[in-house]
Length: 230
Image (cartoon, rainbow, N blue to C red; front, side, top):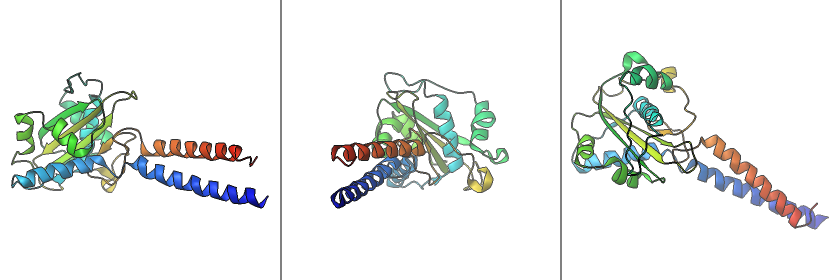
């Protein structure tokens, strides 16, 4: 009996270790939209251009934009989609909780997609830099702020999509989120300017964590049966 109790304690300890590991994995080590903004700013700094303010309101609007277009990723990894301009103020901004009087000027837009997930440096080089035109958008001297949105297509094998929006406005005065900057919680995807972790721009982090919990419990139960505890 003592031996079984000791075995049970070791299995419980192992289960907690597995749960902790999967929890860290599900968060994907932070918000990759923020990481992509860092890559953009490092590229600008290398060209002796000022860094851009990481705007959460603009980032959330970028997420809304790319969610609208996620069914339009072509085989050559281009996004063939252009929502009406009215959608920015009538749909995207309200979905984020952006205070409409603070809606500013959007001075640049880059969208792209890939059939598999890419880390931020690779996403920058393979998604944001299509050609000289998109590179000139990134290096535009009039930009003062940037927001990035990332989302995974609804199907498990679908593509990942990225959107970068640039603004030319006074710092911290535009695209202000309601509720003291919290805005409306987004159920999927990632957007820059906030500290919320997400899982590769795909499923909601809480859902991934719940799945990890279930698999960990199943593993522990099977080990207990295997060792003859029951």
